[in-house]
Length: 260
View (cartoon, rainbow, N blue to C red):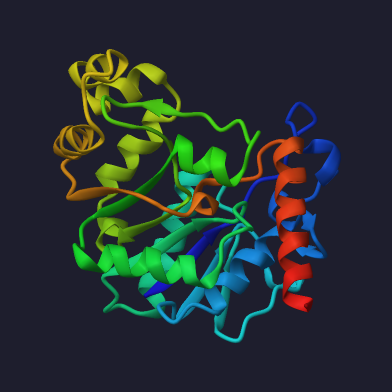
């Protein structure tokens, strides 16, 4: 499986990590001695399931390294456009590839073991989108005080994961991407895509996670799967200064354990 990393985005003056980044890409924010995105690339580099790596939003001048094939795609100006560009490059590298692993650059606590678990899980039941979420109790046990945002279902309370698997065939579904991009501009359009009946049931906490999965995939005309991850690291993105400090402490502790 090939992987692409979303590494675009420079925090502006009104965003939480502006003081830490000072006009530089968020993905290049240094944590425990190396750029945040390099931690993610290292995890992909050590994973048996990953063949090639594409970084979207940076260029080779930033000095990232990997023993595997590492390619760069310029920032396309937005998350969905960057996802499209990443899928396109994966398709160019390997026209026969059916699935690609997508990961955000701001989950630096992930490990190669977690990457392999994620890829193998998706291969068990391939579809258009294979999505993971982390239960609140799992996140708070691993990263107390992380203050993630959670969605409450009938059976579980979760936050979304940032390492998911998508079908490479989605790259040619222009209408699908157009709808997603258009919906990002309007909460009402987002609700319409999901379905107002589904949205109401979610708000009333009348749907289980898998019932919501089925409804949303049917509405979007996708074959999708949702899973719970035992690894909080897959959803522990660095968005705010206190999260930066939590992850820095975790990675420094990991480095100290490795030296012993």
